[in-house]
Length: 303
Image 1 (tube, rainbow, N blue to C red):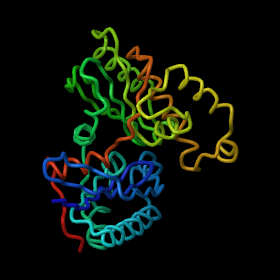
Image 2 (cartoon, rainbow, N blue to C red):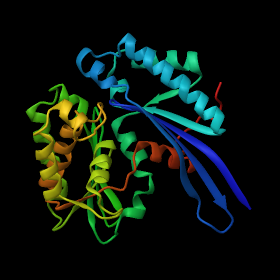
Image 3 (tube, rainbow, N blue to C red):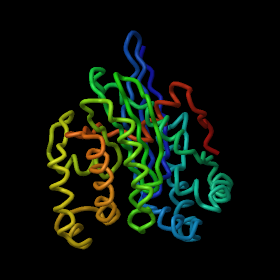
């Protein structure tokens, strides 16, 4: 007997808001399959407000409302039975974050859970990450966002350390990351990885996904430190406008891709990793998986 249900995850990040709708396919004597049905990304850059003015602007509140209204309609037309909306560092740090969440609940019926960095890392870890991991290898998992980056050290298939740092692409663009924050991150990575002779990096986030796609590498093959360094250096020879017109990057990707590359390269350098694997997973995938496994609360009614 085949059973198919649709779950939805909303990821309210510092750089963009995403809606992922997945088919949960259950079949007797077969492992449950999670198949992406629809993915919508809206570049509402909340971090540009919050990291400078410490609150979400009226303009972006209005954009959020319209986005959530659209997402609600999409979930209804897809027949979604369970959903969860998670907001990360931008709404977490906004003085009016809770107020905006209440307004969205009142206007759209969508409940937003503002989560801490550690919970974000735990949800991401609930993804299909295990299927990409070789239990004989050691990894540093790096998920780069607009406001923060989550790091996890995975040894023989087990997560042994995890931490969230307020170093993200939008924050870096606005020159809001102090030298001390980089030094603290460097020390943490070196301390957590120094005892392992060989370690590899697993990268997630829209920017590394884009770089991997551009590379033309086969799925499952890594990007080398040399390749990523060369791409990073090449990006900096183009202006923002040229990255859009010549490199064909979206306007909300053309600026953040440089600081994102810097974070990944720093993680590779400080851990001694020569390769970075890009499995194309993230918070949205983790939310879907966590809802299915009942490790997080979910919301079933779209009012």
